Length: 204
Image 1 (cartoon, rainbow, N blue to C red):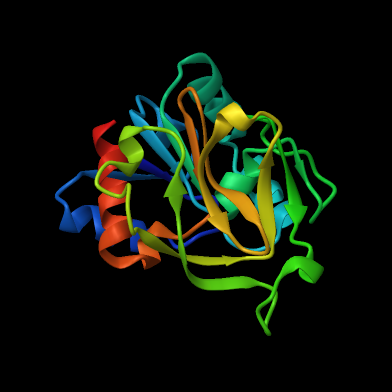
Image 2 (image 1 turned 30 degrees about the vertical axis):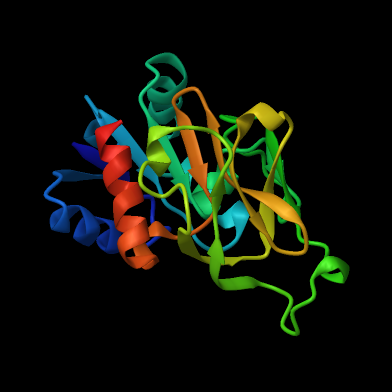
């Protein structure tokens, strides 16, 4: 059972549709009561960092999520801004992040980007796993995913980098620390590659 955290930010229905296709049951959590007995959690997110953090903090689910992730070690995956929220803080805003992974969210340096349209980083790009983890099973070579972001996740420990992508230099497009996973790209928009990754998460 996958529990999708619905705090008003992120395309929940897109994830529901992917899991329907791979025959994995899904539950949508909008309250702390909905989180009871969660086996695996997905934290989606789009838009501004502070807005997303405010929405989550005001949802009534924050304390329960911390308990599930930090104390009970329930597997969780943060997606796009959901990944960035797992960091300590972000250059995009002033609020503290969840502090689930020791990292800082920083803005891309436009001077290092060769593309004519520099920001946001938008469209398909390669994702290269640097850790041998089941989340990327079947995606070790030639996997591409859809991105849309201006800020990136900088791990304070290289041990937490799960995969890298090149955009004006390599950045951590996926991170991992114990039961916590983060991916900067959108698997729900990445066709078969994203479907494989989300199915892999269900099987962890």
